[in-house]
Length: 246
Picture 1 (cartoon, rainbow, N blue to C red):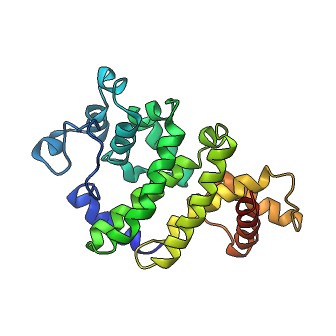
Picture 2 (cartoon, rainbow, N blue to C red; picture 1 turned 60 degrees about the horizontal axis):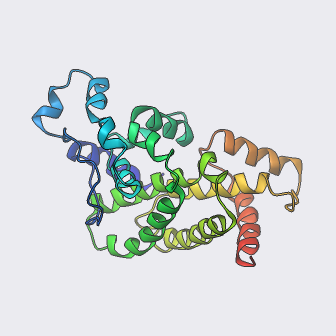
């Protein structure tokens, strides 16, 4: 892991940086801000997280777009890195914050996630003009959004059009990450690698070279930390051909 981890301590000390000006007007404004005296007054992290929950009457009325922006601004978003692996860390976030749980119940969640994913491909070129902390936070939020998109609950609900759009956008984002490798870390490769691994293991048309290749992919899905790039390069090649021909 490279650049993104260089920024985490800075981000923790200075609060979660939010890139750009969002057009969403109804995202929830957390009542307690990181770094303030009120924030420091909480005796435990548990009490602080309890204070960050969205009130039920607000939670049901907020738009899905506003809810997504709120989740991406959750002060403990970095907890996705504190589990045994990123999937475990994401499950920690789901348990910690009612905003995530509500988001994954929304009927239009998939289209909202895909629109945000599309928008981030445009924002990537702009963020390179910003300072290191802002770049690091942008790429971290990018990681979290991609991790939302590759959850099984999302993948199971994709229709054919949404599935094709997700994979075509993932190709574009892979190009962006490689083009801007000075700001994206190796960790940013993980969500899309996981997406491709999940797809391959459920694709009856894909012919595994050997049992070891299938075993590596299965183990990666169970504990997504890192994977042999020689295995992923073959998978990526197949996925690219499959979805570009649809």
